[in-house]
Image 1 (cartoon, rainbow, N blue to C red):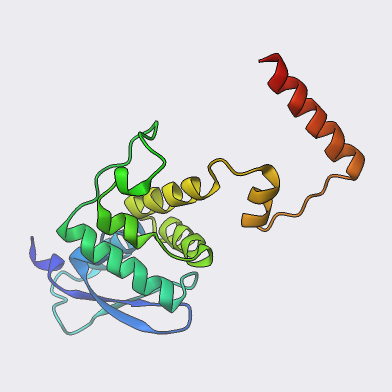
Image 2 (cartoon, rainbow, N blue to C red):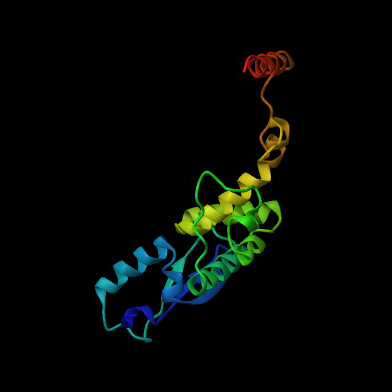
Length: 174
């Protein structure tokens, strides 16, 4: 690694909590990498005198800690790439056990990890968390999926019945 990869960057959560993260790990985030890239252009002699702080206003402390845990592990043992079509609906058959365990969290944390991975632009984490969400909703009815995503059913009783009849007719004709 070159000299600018050995420093520390401070990632600041929504609540203002700060995490000191090695630059090489933090750069798994394209957002962080691009932010550091623009500051590296300004001063190449910036050793330990000035540590860069990067605010992440969309990421709660607990979620940021999980993101850093993921990036740290990923830098030591990269995740098996997720290919489509999926060869299984079991996460542990698609990626290594550590990664399957990592996304074995409550639904709220999983959705916040998706949001954080998207905001911080960490493609492998976004792929993993979206895989976990897809496994979560696979085989569920429309009503169950609406409940999972907290989506209200805006159909009137008559519209819902018409929609169900259309789905039934389409299923019977195939």
